[in-house]
Length: 64
Image 1 (cartoon, rainbow, N blue to C red):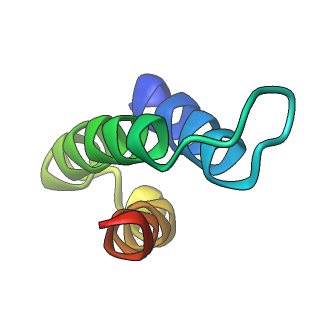
Image 2 (cartoon, rainbow, N blue to C red):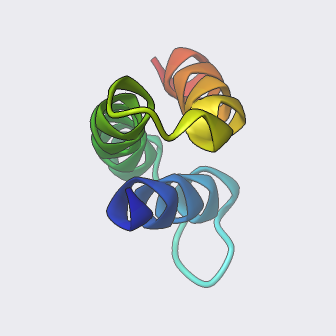
């Protein structure tokens, strides 16, 4: 799902403070959305999103 990938990028931006104020709370929200969207994509057979899903899960774990 494209929106899952977009949410992953926004999560990274919030976590690192790139283009916005650094916000772990914001990052947590975006990473959570990314996990949801990318999980749906992988379940629907779009296996190329597995790497992005792992990145989103790792980001969510970092900002807890």
